[in-house]
Image (cartoon, rainbow, N blue to C red):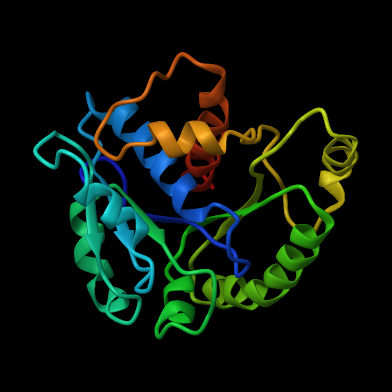
Length: 226
């Protein structure tokens, strides 16, 4: 196991492309690295999106000499056989996967995820697509349960304009959806993230934007305490 946690595997997953999985992975990794640096929390990000590799390409353009979290390119077809070794070294392993099942090994990696967050934009199209994805994913949750592994799944609203009536209506009904959602959400801020997102810099944790990551971490902690 890792130094502090038992090599927990966490992923932002959805079979709908363009919902912000990679961006959310980087933002949460930045947060974990910042708050866990003093305690020695070991964070690894596995870029398993063979076609895009957007996270590892982002790191390659930055100052890799800084004391940042680890980013590794490992294809989804190779990741399962390496996961136990990774779990012995790192406390939290964030896996970034493609938004489809065509890439070899993606389905197998789903069976390794302990805590899954399903991001979606607050639109009818995204909700319908995400509910269909969850219908498929439930068989994986059941299989893991039968094998003695617990799985936690939460929805997270991304790119939200909180003033839109469509979002307010959906947010009011979120407790009736197929899986639980975080109370907090990620506001629309594409320009800010495009300009400022970094995989090597610490983040200011004393901002309103950190609430969603605090909530994500609280769900992970709850999973460990089940």
